[in-house]
Length: 165
Image (cartoon, rainbow, N blue to C red):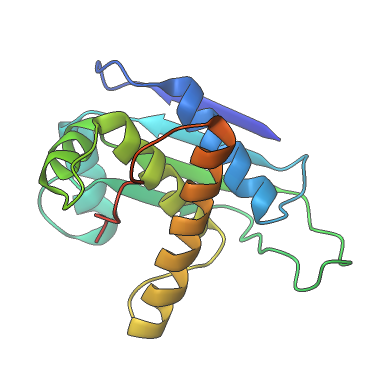
Protein backbone atom coordinates (compact mmCIF):
# COMPACT_ATOMS: atom_id res chain seq x y z
CA UNK A 1 0.00 0.00 0.00
CA UNK A 2 1.49 3.31 -1.03
CA UNK A 3 0.31 6.06 1.32
CA UNK A 4 1.83 9.53 1.36
CA UNK A 5 1.20 11.89 4.27
CA UNK A 6 2.10 15.50 3.53
CA UNK A 7 1.76 17.98 6.40
CA UNK A 8 1.39 21.49 4.99
CA UNK A 9 -0.46 22.85 8.04
CA UNK A 10 2.38 24.16 10.18
CA UNK A 11 0.88 22.16 13.07
CA UNK A 12 2.71 19.17 14.49
CA UNK A 13 0.61 16.05 13.98
CA UNK A 14 1.29 12.35 14.49
CA UNK A 15 1.93 11.54 10.83
CA UNK A 16 2.90 7.95 11.63
CA UNK A 17 -0.45 7.30 13.33
CA UNK A 18 -2.30 8.77 10.32
CA UNK A 19 -0.29 6.50 8.03
CA UNK A 20 -0.83 3.46 10.27
CA UNK A 21 -4.59 3.88 10.66
CA UNK A 22 -5.04 4.55 6.94
CA UNK A 23 -3.10 1.38 6.13
CA UNK A 24 -5.14 -0.57 8.71
CA UNK A 25 -8.46 0.76 7.33
CA UNK A 26 -7.54 -0.10 3.75
CA UNK A 27 -6.41 -3.60 4.71
CA UNK A 28 -9.58 -4.13 6.72
CA UNK A 29 -11.64 -3.04 3.72
CA UNK A 30 -9.63 -5.47 1.55
CA UNK A 31 -8.28 -2.82 -0.81
CA UNK A 32 -5.55 -4.06 -3.15
CA UNK A 33 -2.11 -3.76 -1.47
CA UNK A 34 -0.69 -1.91 -4.49
CA UNK A 35 -3.32 0.84 -4.39
CA UNK A 36 -2.26 4.42 -3.65
CA UNK A 37 -3.57 7.05 -1.24
CA UNK A 38 -2.52 10.59 -0.44
CA UNK A 39 -3.26 12.35 2.86
CA UNK A 40 -2.69 16.09 3.01
CA UNK A 41 -2.83 18.05 6.26
CA UNK A 42 -3.63 21.74 5.74
CA UNK A 43 -4.32 24.83 7.82
CA UNK A 44 -7.79 26.32 8.30
CA UNK A 45 -7.38 28.91 5.52
CA UNK A 46 -6.46 26.29 2.91
CA UNK A 47 -9.28 24.01 4.08
CA UNK A 48 -11.77 26.86 3.91
CA UNK A 49 -10.76 27.55 0.30
CA UNK A 50 -11.26 23.89 -0.60
CA UNK A 51 -14.59 23.83 1.23
CA UNK A 52 -15.81 26.87 -0.70
CA UNK A 53 -14.44 25.65 -4.04
CA UNK A 54 -15.79 22.10 -3.90
CA UNK A 55 -18.78 22.25 -1.55
CA UNK A 56 -19.78 25.92 -1.85
CA UNK A 57 -19.86 26.08 1.95
CA UNK A 58 -18.20 28.77 4.09
CA UNK A 59 -15.58 28.11 6.74
CA UNK A 60 -13.08 25.31 7.16
CA UNK A 61 -14.24 21.73 7.63
CA UNK A 62 -12.56 18.76 9.30
CA UNK A 63 -11.99 16.36 6.38
CA UNK A 64 -12.56 16.29 2.65
CA UNK A 65 -12.10 13.34 0.30
CA UNK A 66 -11.34 13.47 -3.40
CA UNK A 67 -11.72 10.03 -5.02
CA UNK A 68 -9.77 9.12 -8.14
CA UNK A 69 -10.44 5.62 -9.46
CA UNK A 70 -13.59 5.05 -7.37
CA UNK A 71 -12.30 1.78 -5.95
CA UNK A 72 -14.72 -0.30 -3.92
CA UNK A 73 -14.13 -3.16 -1.49
CA UNK A 74 -14.59 -6.55 -3.17
CA UNK A 75 -18.10 -7.93 -2.77
CA UNK A 76 -17.04 -11.42 -1.65
CA UNK A 77 -14.08 -12.76 0.32
CA UNK A 78 -12.78 -14.63 -2.70
CA UNK A 79 -13.00 -11.70 -5.14
CA UNK A 80 -9.71 -10.12 -6.19
CA UNK A 81 -9.73 -6.45 -5.16
CA UNK A 82 -9.04 -3.95 -7.94
CA UNK A 83 -5.83 -1.93 -7.87
CA UNK A 84 -5.66 1.81 -8.47
CA UNK A 85 -5.45 5.33 -7.12
CA UNK A 86 -7.84 5.83 -4.22
CA UNK A 87 -7.47 9.60 -4.17
CA UNK A 88 -6.75 12.31 -1.64
CA UNK A 89 -7.87 12.90 1.92
CA UNK A 90 -7.44 16.44 3.23
CA UNK A 91 -7.38 16.94 7.02
CA UNK A 92 -7.48 20.13 9.07
CA UNK A 93 -5.85 19.84 12.52
CA UNK A 94 -7.31 23.16 13.74
CA UNK A 95 -10.86 21.90 13.22
CA UNK A 96 -9.88 18.45 14.56
CA UNK A 97 -8.53 19.98 17.76
CA UNK A 98 -11.74 21.93 18.37
CA UNK A 99 -13.93 18.90 17.64
CA UNK A 100 -11.88 16.69 19.95
CA UNK A 101 -12.38 19.15 22.80
CA UNK A 102 -16.12 19.47 22.09
CA UNK A 103 -16.81 15.73 21.73
CA UNK A 104 -18.82 13.83 24.32
CA UNK A 105 -15.72 11.73 25.00
CA UNK A 106 -13.11 14.48 24.85
CA UNK A 107 -10.00 13.42 23.02
CA UNK A 108 -6.84 14.80 21.50
CA UNK A 109 -6.37 16.41 18.12
CA UNK A 110 -4.34 13.39 16.99
CA UNK A 111 -7.11 10.98 18.01
CA UNK A 112 -9.59 13.10 16.07
CA UNK A 113 -7.28 13.12 13.03
CA UNK A 114 -7.12 9.32 13.21
CA UNK A 115 -10.92 9.13 13.25
CA UNK A 116 -11.11 11.62 10.38
CA UNK A 117 -8.59 9.61 8.37
CA UNK A 118 -10.81 6.54 8.59
CA UNK A 119 -13.82 8.69 7.74
CA UNK A 120 -12.00 9.99 4.67
CA UNK A 121 -10.98 6.48 3.58
CA UNK A 122 -14.59 5.33 3.80
CA UNK A 123 -15.74 8.29 1.69
CA UNK A 124 -13.11 7.39 -0.93
CA UNK A 125 -14.57 3.87 -0.98
CA UNK A 126 -18.05 5.19 -1.70
CA UNK A 127 -19.56 5.32 1.78
CA UNK A 128 -21.72 8.29 2.70
CA UNK A 129 -23.84 9.52 5.59
CA UNK A 130 -26.53 11.64 3.97
CA UNK A 131 -29.34 9.19 4.70
CA UNK A 132 -29.97 7.68 8.17
CA UNK A 133 -29.30 4.10 7.02
CA UNK A 134 -26.08 5.20 5.28
CA UNK A 135 -24.97 7.07 8.38
CA UNK A 136 -25.60 4.02 10.58
CA UNK A 137 -23.59 1.80 8.24
CA UNK A 138 -20.71 4.22 7.72
CA UNK A 139 -20.32 5.32 11.33
CA UNK A 140 -20.61 1.71 12.56
CA UNK A 141 -17.86 0.63 10.18
CA UNK A 142 -15.79 3.68 11.12
CA UNK A 143 -16.05 2.85 14.83
CA UNK A 144 -15.17 -0.81 14.21
CA UNK A 145 -12.06 0.16 12.24
CA UNK A 146 -10.89 2.74 14.80
CA UNK A 147 -11.57 0.33 17.69
CA UNK A 148 -9.76 -2.51 15.91
CA UNK A 149 -6.74 -0.36 15.19
CA UNK A 150 -6.63 0.97 18.76
CA UNK A 151 -6.86 -2.58 20.14
CA UNK A 152 -4.09 -3.76 17.82
CA UNK A 153 -1.89 -0.86 19.00
CA UNK A 154 -2.69 -1.57 22.67
CA UNK A 155 -4.22 1.88 23.14
CA UNK A 156 -6.46 2.21 26.15
CA UNK A 157 -9.36 4.47 27.02
CA UNK A 158 -12.53 5.17 25.08
CA UNK A 159 -12.33 5.51 21.34
CA UNK A 160 -13.22 8.93 19.96
CA UNK A 161 -16.92 9.33 19.34
CA UNK A 162 -17.80 10.32 15.79
CA UNK A 163 -17.72 14.10 15.51
CA UNK A 164 -17.64 14.43 11.74
CA UNK A 165 -20.69 15.85 10.09
